[in-house]
Structure formats: C-alpha cells, structure tokens
Image: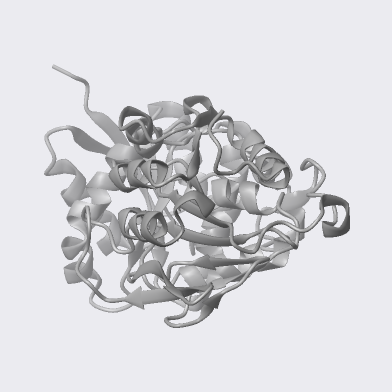
Length: 370
C-alpha cells in the first residue's frame, strides 16, 4: 500500500486543531501525526517527525505564522498550507505567505468555525494532497526574510533580474494585442514573475488565477506596487487598456468581449466551470473568440486541467501560446494538460516567459508560427 501523507497541524486554537485533525484522519490517504499550538513547539515536531505537509495558522503566540514560515522556507523548505482568516488583514498576510513559499491557503470563517471548517473539509484535504506533491522552492523572499513579518512589496525585488526596459526603448507595441494568463496553485508568485518584467507600454493583460472572494483585491494591489504596468481587479463593462493588467475577481468569472475596436471586461456570477470560479477556461475561450491571432496565451503552474481545452481553441484561432515548464512549476498539472492538448507553442522556464513574449511581440510576429 502507498504510504499515507503525514500532516502536522499548527494552530493556537484547540478547537481548530481538533477539527483539522479529525478531517485529515477521516481520509484513507493521509494522517495527522501531530498538532502544535505555537511555532516553537511545531519546530521541534517537524525535526522529530519529518512530516510531508504542515497546515499553519497566521496569528499565534510567541512567533506569528509569517515569521515562522519565513524561517522554515529559508532553512528547511517544505509544503505548507496556510489557514487564513477571511479579513482584509488576513488577505494581505496570505499574499505575504505565498510570496515566502507557502503552496496554498484555505480561508477559514471568522465565526462559526466548527461548521465552517467542516464545510471546507473537501477543499482542505484536496489542497493537502496538492501540497504533498508540490515542487517546493526556496524563494528569494524567504532567503531575505530575517524579518519575514515585513509585508512590504519592494523587498520582493531584491536580487531579482533587472525589470523590463523603459517603454521608449522598446517601441510601441500594438494596442490590438492582448495577453491572457491562467494559473492556479503557485500562480500568485508565477504571475508576479511575469508581470514585473513587462514594460509600461505592453499590450493589455487579462488574468485568471484560481482564488476565492476577498483575496484578489490584495493580490492586485500588491502586484500594482511592484509593476511598471497598472494592475487591478477587473470590473464588468470596463474597457481593457494597453499597459494594464486585469485580474478576475475571486469567486466571479472573467471574460472579454468586443465593443467596436475595443476589448471590454465581462465579470459575471455564472456557475463554476471545471469546478472553478473564476475559471481559466472561461477567459481563454473568450480570448479565442474575440482576439484570435492578436492574442498571446500563457499557462502557468496549477493543479488540474482548467483552461487546457480553451487554450487549444486559442491556438486554433491563431494565438501564440507559452506554457511554463515542469522544473519551474510548483504543480505541473495545468501546464501538462495544455501540452497534452496540443495547446503549447513554446514550453519555457518561468523566468524566460516574459522576455520571450516581449521579443515576439516587438517583432510583430505574434500571430505567425515558428
């Protein structure tokens, strides 16, 4: 028989520890091998028990979860699933946790924790399974996290490759072009890597990152503070402009439409697609229909197959598509499925995607096959 995934639960609430342990132990493929009410106890348990995954609360006594995560990912990188409170502060801290190397997060309710966690049981165990197979990297943010609690955005850039050249050096890129990006697990940092290397005059960018309501506002704000382009949540009916990136609001679908010569955002509350809302499939299908040969597609790290079929439709409509390679992915599921569906024109390491895309756009050959 396959070995069970071994999980340690770290949370200062005895109720939460008990509930998470029970949820985990109900699964045939995983077991909770220990619980800790603060990070200092957890540190010793991790050394002694060598778990496959830990779940980690943010706010705890003696050392908060972000400080602990930064030290853990610097010294002993391993899969971490954050348990975050659904508040504005919780969303900001969660973005910092993902920057430091957490694989994913679950947003726990502020009230009714017992019922809330049980309602989230399927999501929790699914994300533990993903974390157990994730390719965890020692992140730059964690390496620089002597004071990991700092949530400042600029520190994430220390030691990064130089940002994109100023717009004047690149020449105007076509306003008819549009870049569509899809991602899931590990995608917040992968998207950051791509966007921070794009110039202020790049074509419009539309993005679907699997994320629940309440977190995309902080995600967009953080990216906006780091990028030369403007980054925001998409709003229904707004014009899609060059030099801007638009992120699907958590819990809503995002697609594009045409209004004369312009692209327009469509944000709606339709049912989930491929179990996701927002869904990459919805965005990519609209891009295939509305943009065709003027589109560039990018599929980044994530679990599952969402967007693979529609990315193939984009390619058939004339788009040129980039897919992140396995070695640089946290989870290779969505890129693997895009490749399997014949949707990829190039498969590249994450750090090469922005440069390759810009070179192709500048050449004016974004719609011509190599």
